[in-house]
Length: 477
View 1: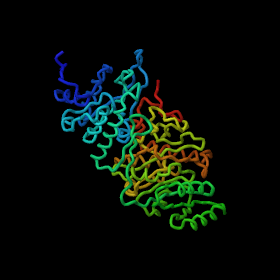
View 2: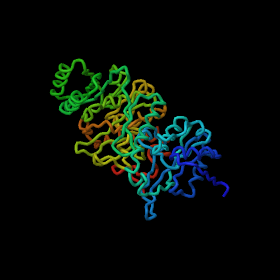
View 3: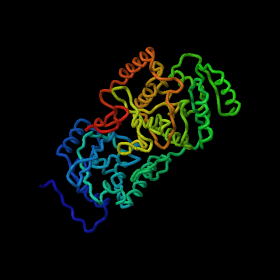
View 4: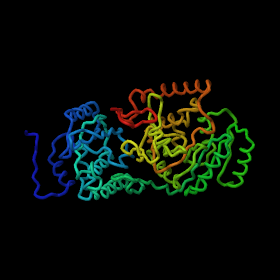
């Protein structure tokens, strides 16, 4: 077959430089990187070619994959999200059958021995920095053969790969001028990226709406004051229709104890979460806004710095955290846009369960995060008109995030920030007729305003994954 070219090297130069020798003689419009012992589906190249024909600006392609077990069975399918730059910095989720336009590949600095073990990750990061469009084929078209010496079976088989991976991600961030530190995360071949707080050490406005339940608010504020390691913040407390004398006594004590930090503003109208947020933002002094429910409790001491470092990036519109119920099950690890408007990912799973391919333990981009704890920039908040006031109670945070996505801002979820969330203690459940009617109207608003998501699907959720709560982000059999 004259399509097969055999290259005989005089010495083994390692995987990076051996691969470079193959790239040098490749004559195709695209170059695909295929491991020597793995298996392709017959329609893989067809699917890639079809995508290229339909999108002439595609410069990089990848597909879903699974494992080829020693007994010949296929298992462990990895259904990937569409392009997700923060997840790619956490780990090389794109991985196998990476395909790059040759004209782009020729402009990239080739891999060297120092990246052996993470050569694909380094190449992918370099390519996405310049690619016009990255295309994901959401089908399992690649089978990764499991063997004792492969990283698929044994993460300890290539200890040098982690060092190379850290270098690849750090080099990528340095090229982009992002001030960040990379270190190994909690799992093999995954990387924790900590973005530096801006040199200006900016003020952060923590905006907390509240009604009565002074003990709940006190628990929240104590956790902020006693645990936070960032010192430049203000607490803007929005009082809304409290009736208990103990609540107002608590406000007086709070302002007397923390006169330089706490400011109380009063919203004297109906409960409307969107209006409350917009009102609070109007009274906040900072360009960085941290919207926080009164029924939360901080766990992570450097929570503000972590969120602020991410939020300060030019490409980021909002940052969300990982939240737990009091029984240490997951309340929030990102949101997916679904037929039922939106759902919390991995909800009700145990705190120490990292979920499908450990994705809830990976910093990554989503379509939305909950406003129970969300940081955003005032500039972006104002660009999208803040919270939509027609959405009084439900889905205003999802709508806000989708408006940010509409202007190409990223929504970043970080598991490096953890809080407890005692969910809806102040306002109760949606059980009255009036509340159910209002909820129905808000569902209708979301389905009308964001119809595209409900037809095309959430780009950060693979179509092969279930999105029903609480067992979401599991694959269909």
